[in-house]
Length: 121
Image (cartoon, rainbow, N blue to C red):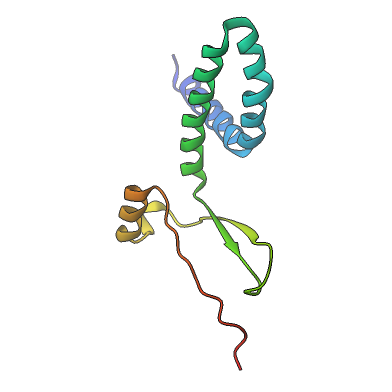
């Protein structure tokens, strides 16, 4: 195999991976519903459950690649609903404080709560 063929395969793999990460939410929904129904009809309920577990494992990897953070906030203390904000991290893993990474690895998530104290007077 020539060097150009190897480079071509690497570029094709990178493009497929980029598309998979970009459209993963839509792909995951389709796999969990439409494709899982077809698998259950042909191979049975056990195969469907194994497929869901495999999709969940892939989803965990994709979420680590995306470095997403979800923040729930209220505008006021008496507000009935939360505002959901999704932030995509732009910092590479090596720039994050090691204590924060250890906490996330121990608990799986990092939760910070802030108390609303009203407007400054």
